[in-house]
Image: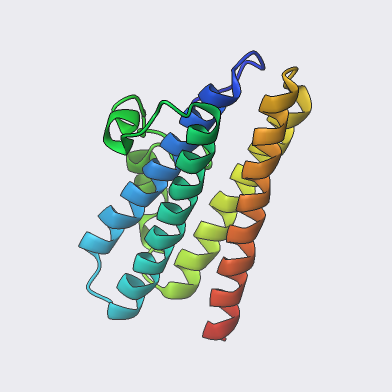
Length: 160
C-alpha cells in the first residue's frame, strides 16, 4: 500500500490519491471486460465514471497548486496506479473477491467498502499531517469520498 508519512506536500498527496483513483478505475475496467452480465457491466461503467470525475477534480486541485502544470498527460506520467483505493492491488483484490463480482448488489457493496476505506484513510492521514494545506487537501478528498459513498448508496437503493 502506498502510505503517507505525514511529511508530504499537498501536491504529493494529490498524486498518491490520483494513483489510487486510477487503480480503482483500472480494476473496474478489468472486471467489466470479464463479465457477461449486462447489468454488472452497466454499473461498472458508472463506477468508472465516478473515478474519472474524481480524477478530474484532483487534477484541477493539483493545477491550482501548480499553475505551470498544463498537460494532463505529462502529469499522469508521474502517477503510480498499481494500488487502488482500499490499499489493494487490482490483482490481489480480484483474486480474493472474484466470486463476489457476479451481481450488481455484490459489486456495489464491494465498491462501498473500498470507498469507506479510502474515506477512513484520508481522514486518518489528515489528522496526522503537519502541513495545514496538505491537511486541507486530504479533508477535501475525504469529502469527495463521502460523495462517492452517497452515489453508491443511491445506486444500491435504485436496485432494491
